[in-house]
Image 1 (cartoon, rainbow, N blue to C red):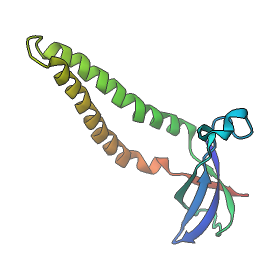
Image 2 (cartoon, helix red, strand yellow; image 1 turned 90 degrees about the horizontal axis):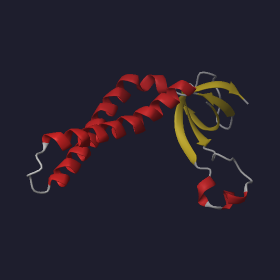
Image 3 (cartoon, rainbow, N blue to C red; image 1 turned 135 degrees about the vertical axis):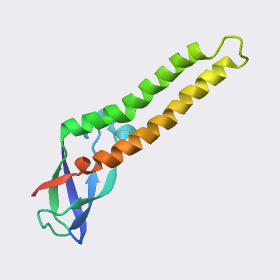
Image 4 (cartoon, one colour; image 1 turned 120 degrees about the vertical axis):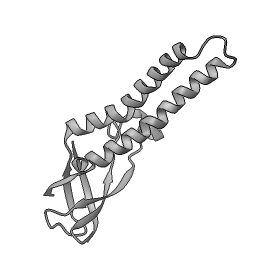
Length: 138
């Protein structure tokens, strides 16, 4: 995935920059007057491997496979864990228990907390691979 960013400042080998996220359709379609297509700016720090200076526009790259795998982790793992714990709760909690559905839902909610902890540990382990890299100064 390639993004374009504008460097705001450089400090100790890191470039602080503004990257504008683009909507799916870009700009100019009939529905772009709504907030659904709004382009939002993000402010990030990237290693300044190209010795770019403040005011430069640079091309940034991150591996597409990494992005897609991260999306799967963030959305897929909590969903699967939620459904699995609800399914397991159906068998573990007897039907005679009052408020059974509430307890089953609480198990499902617990799965989100567990997923958050697991994803946080994975992020710490694989966080360096997510680093954007400057590829060229435009």
